[in-house]
Image 1 (tube, rainbow, N blue to C red):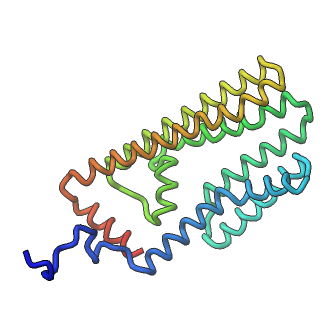
Image 2 (image 1 turned 45 degrees about the vertical axis):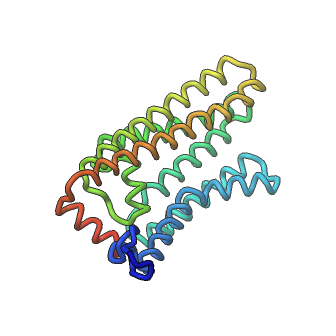
Image 3 (image 1 turned 60 degrees about the horizontal axis):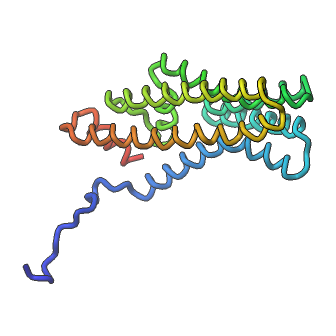
Length: 232
């Protein structure tokens, strides 16, 4: 073959590549999701780094979450579930810290928040949009109606919810049965020991689901969804 002859590129066709406005909108959705998830923790840990005590830091994070929820309601004309969940979690933490200053009950605060998150995940499995599907829809700008992907989301939400609940129960047992200093040193690593494998498994599970989808002949619904996604 003549080297000067143009060859076909194995990359994605130009028509399937997202346009610059679509990439900009995707970055905007990613930034919005990061703010929904991170603005309250940023306020909380920022206060702690500035030397503010735990209770005022939690109250500040709760106030920031409430203001962010109000801003999203004004912008979206509806209450955002993720922003509401962050408000509830930090409100619960602030209420717990206000009730007691004893070290052992305070160590129960984070496991109870994890249990609340696990409960939200598990109950969302009973709805048409499980939690991971909701988060994916927020990121990609549109819900997915593919049955394989929805089943994958439901399985991931169920496993993540069960993992968070199990992690919360183990941490509560550690706090109630071990000395405070020992429990305080064991519970944070336990949280990461559960969350990191869950995230890795979820990514691999989602990848397998997408592989099964691409192995099937494209349906009219999937073609329309891809077309709408590239236009966003």
